[in-house]
Image (cartoon, rainbow, N blue to C red; front, side, top):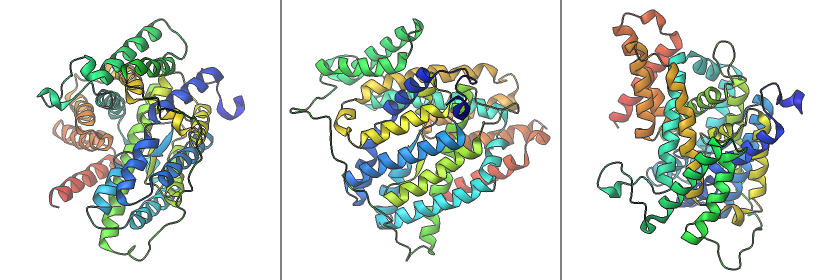
Length: 434
């Protein structure tokens, strides 16, 4: 075990890895319900997609564990599944089989790019300051996700972003706040597994508030439905429409994964002497293989989940935590009703609290140097307010190039960063001209 995962070498324990793995799963278990719900809008069958979601998440996360030894979990990504259903199928009038074919092609391309080190070169070209800013930006991003999911933050307050009144009229928000306070107390008291305990206890607290719904004749076990297998449509694979869909999947997934990996590596200190992510090639391969497996099973793009940071906050530092998370996804196939009990109000405190932990990287950003501080600020600002990791990286890198050039420090811009900034700018112009 030690030789395979280097648990002691990384300053962790088996107990911490188990707790971290379970915490990550609970923080992202919502995808088991949300992904089938979104893809069913394209005409796919809910239970079949549920099975595909759980199995593809298990496969991708296991590959991450053994090829990269990182505490990062994967599953079909939010945003990408919405693009699958609402843009490709409903918006463009394509079949869901057409969309799955594009996802499959994306995965194959990513495998090739990973094998030849292209994706690795892109990640390693990101300036150190930007990597720290990405970590902070992700912290704020998942904080706002938690606030919104729990109903704490709502536009119904009359402002673009505002807090609701913590009353029984907003029971979910009230329960989440109680859970957040509980998590803080447990963490400050240095109780092992504070975040996981917080999720479980908050779920129980939610019962009398009506937030945790326990159905009558509750049965924890269920029989999984058969997934779709190899439902591809190659007839239109050489069309312009297919190319546009494929490029969109590629672009969004590439930089969502990039941001997540940088954020987790920064938080868990899983970097080499050059500041690059350890075993990044294996991590990117996990993302690619997971996407191919997901497409074959009948689900949208599989990507690294930012909620993995909650597991890292709980103590996870190795791929053994990912093994635990993968096993939980496999168990979810048969224990779907049990996991369905956990409300968003119970996982929200964990996400909000991880935001605090990831803010700590901000202290090492040189804000006194505008050519470093402004791009960092743009990255940090954009992620939560655009609700997108990839947009944060996009605008941050463009700002980095502009600031360095105007500050007469163009020599500090890596060649790959120049290329990325040009691609990002071209993509923004392309989107604006649609």
